[in-house]
Length: 601
Image (cartoon, rainbow, N blue to C red):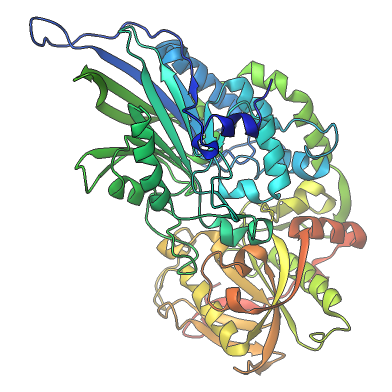
């Protein structure tokens, strides 16, 4: 029977109760090393903490946007079915009672499988289904999972229902009730591992989530929850866990290790704070890192106060890797002490999918495959985003066209109906495509893989120029006459594709020979230079409007309309109503890359 939220809160400090302890099997005999005192070998014990992060709704090695087996240039595989095989192997090697399995968040958003059970056949419905991620993680036997920011994308009711369906706690020491400022989720989980020495080892897992939730999902959490910084809450909880008898403290943090933020100075908290937590908060042995979608097999940070090294590891997203933290403990002075700890990652492409997971969720998979293959229209031409990161491509124009039409219709007859409507969009995926002929839900959904909604904000011409200049820092400065290698042209300063915005409704050039900050040339509206004082309505997604990416002006700009419908669904509905996609109706070259006035392409 799944344990619900009340069960976990009743066993956590959130409810003022005692320590949550789960039993473990008897460990395999530990290897004695050396001698101490009167010829006695010291008592030693080893165990392993396994970790995943940023699963994003991936159960199977399947891409629902292309409706075929997942593959990339490195031939990675994805999904919990593969992770399950790796987990089974480690449990067999170590003894199940000598292992824990945890996750660092972003679990229920990202694929059409997770979308289907949040929106199409929602888990929140009366007698609704059990979420596939809950089913699979329960079957694999997770001990705990931290909350990710994307857990909040579908609203708190969906998250609470998912929490209820999980046999393990969702942890968030810095996810607080906005009124009481008490934890809205269990802050920690503690497991007792039995050793052959008659002295149990208590392992505490502290869960920390991302303070950016307050910005990115403002409409879902404002007035309900608040998200203080990771370092602040870790400093509060780690000493408590030690005082409650924790021999080992592991932090599961949905926060990258770099110490950077994508939303600038809008919050007093750092988005990617895992490294800072390790550096500033003594008493932590290991941190499972998430959120940044990077692979860090093993990384050590020295704690400034204790001088001890803390090991960090981030397994690659979507179930492509499994982190292993291998601990060696020694019994000394009446307590267990961490003698050694290291980390490594296993690649899920080295194993087959666990047939138990495949069988368990086969019906759900087939339902979603049928759903994404529904035909919603036809296209007169094939279109792709393969070059959309450096060329104005029709598929990005399609997103902007739909957004402009939607906002223009919403503002009709109102106070802002007379203002020109512009639109921003990014190349969210370089593999999105619409074929000539039949267009399906998966084709349209592939253009917009995120659960963003649409807003309308007012910017001046001067603000628009600064917005575009900020976006244009995405390109590596390339002198006129130098060879242009598209594989090295973009993502300057590690800027992700989704943080490069193009704006439709105006025309402009991006001069990549110039330094960032002075690249936007010939910005015009209706053939005339944009007046710095002129006002425009910008159709913008809620992530950007809330400050995601730290673009200038937009977060403080006047909001004149907001919609709760996902942009992805707006596109699908538009295609269904239109019936036929003809690029001639929406495609145009509004921007281009230049060097000293000469087009690059």
